[in-house]
Length: 516
Image (cartoon, rainbow, N blue to C red; front, side, top):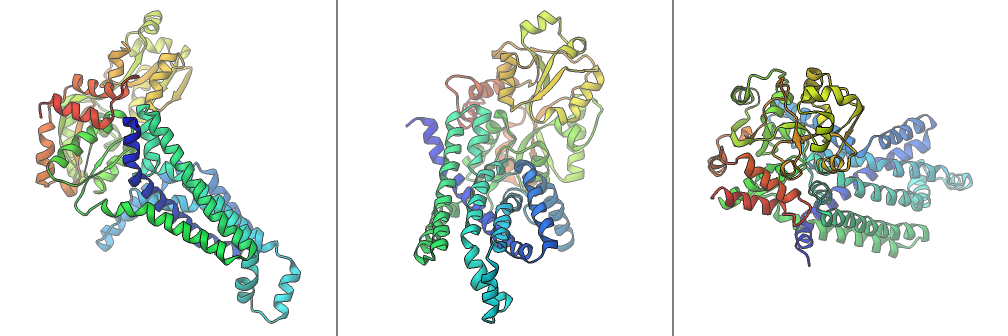
């Protein structure tokens, strides 16, 4: 068995357990909400349209967006709860995912339920009324049993949708089979991508077949089939979630990471040092920039690495650039004062945004700086990572140089470099610590107007861990010790085309290079 496949199987109990728990919980909650609404819709034409239209409207929202929208809402509610009641709750991970997936599961259950009840022959209703049944008795003893096969067909559809959509819960901090897919796409670990897709597909098929037994039992009035399907489903859920009992122990440190190779490596580096110190560590990866910082400030992450320019522009909404040292000084003071977040210090390198071109293309166009690029931009295509075009940094560059590209396209960072190499993009928003810049001999365009702020990689500590001696002692030796060459080498070991290292292997190599 290949090392990548071995690594994938090693992660399966945790990823599958969380995926099953999340999907099953969302489906149960979806059924509990949708069935009463289906009954209400079947009883009242006035309610029917708004209920079905509302459920349909939810389906038009991309599932990833729906997941993301719940996080800031829950974070605000958690903050309010803590301020008023003295107790908050976690807005990261399971809860936003559960609520979003519950809403996403409702349409097929609601629509099938209402249609099934409305489709019952009127003569049957009249017969039930004729023998003196109350409305409640008629519903429970006649209508729902007759509608059960159609309702179960809706539940089967909802189950498949929910299991598939649950893979998208990773960016809001929920572990799932999507962890394979997001990490695999970024690092071009196709074994992980295929493994995650296959595991999700097998899980969906298994759930569909077990629910199919319940549907067949309902259609044939066979209690045996219903029990086989239900018991099989419960045994499967119990078997999948059992390994989670040993995870997430109280007192465990939570190390966060965004969604690119460098972040995975640094998260593994910090997690490894904490584990060597005897600590329990869990990881929350593939987080968006805004989600990661808010989660840290709320105490849902204990530590992660961010970049001074990102925090300067996004967290503090600053547009000036007083210089590298001053940005770091003011940033540390303001985050501590405003949010209680501790900037432990810079790791020693910058990972700055840098507009980059292939050398042959830059030479042909006579482009060496962003000022030169402004003249050629109307004929060129800009490729960016998924965040860049919505960030203040891009607005600052655009305004400073009057950049007006023919086309702008967003990519997962790995595919952004592929687009540049293949000619689909002429310019990309690269990262200065990325080893592919040197390996591919790319040209970094100079920034004579200093529109791009500095981007020191800084270790951020959550307010609740600000005085944690074990955490601080484990991570403080990293401050100022990682230069850009070391980080580029580590990044390239994960991102190169052949003989890729895993982020954990790259972190170990980086630790060895640091002499610790």
